[in-house]
Image (cartoon, rainbow, N blue to C red; front, side, top):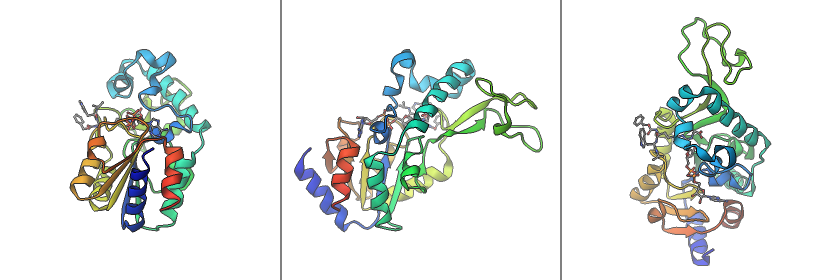
Length: 248
Ligand code: BV8
């Protein structure tokens, strides 16, 4: 990893007021959760993620998509936060009110590491929701659905879907607004483990750069947003973040 980039990022972090940490799937890679593109290994390799992670994909083959999520949920439950998640949580604890974590990830590792207020742009894979708005009053409870693949409501036949934002779906309005504000107001944005391929999330890095923030990227590989960075720390999150944050 480039020592000059590390020194520059550390120095900027020491003097920074507001910091925004923006993370993607690479943040959880060293916890054993495949990145979104790697998630299609083995059995799933013949599928396109944007097709499986979409309402059309789910309606076309509910059991296939449900099984994909069930397998990913089991992986999330087995995973533990890694040294990178813990370093971010410790950094935020030492700077109360000055660090905002914005994540594209649908796992709960930031939260389990201690960043309970992390802004989730793409929802929560461990949550269930109804596929269709429930017309019953009072509305049926997804937790009461049967044990099908996917589970269905015994009362109204509605299907259960994972509580994530699918491709083609709007992000949770409050989440994107809060993330935009953090990106505009931060003095430093730390971008960790994202290809920068998915929008509008990736636009947050451009927003921060345009607003005058120092942008540092942590990623072992080049990404679509490297051109927005003042410093690129070419390495894995669980190794780089403790080095960067424990000395800042
Ligand atoms: C939207 C939940 C408005 C689901 C996710 C046509 C119609 C509609 C929209 C579009 C369209 N064409 C394009 C769009 C926009 C679309 C989009 O961006 N498409 C892409 C594919 C081009 N976006 C949307 O649809 C969004 N909604 O636009 O609504 C709208 C609505 C209707 C009509 C028009 C507009 C919704 C996007 C949210 C999708 N849901 N997740 C699920 O998980 O199943 S996104 C999903 O992919 C993940 O959550 C994650 O956010 C994203 C993948 O991105 P990354 O996190 O960056 O992960 P990736 O695998 O790509 O990269 C990993 C990185 O980690 C790599 O760089 C790697 O080098 C690095 N890495 C690896 N190891 C490590 C590491 N880094 C550090 N340490 C390591 N050890």
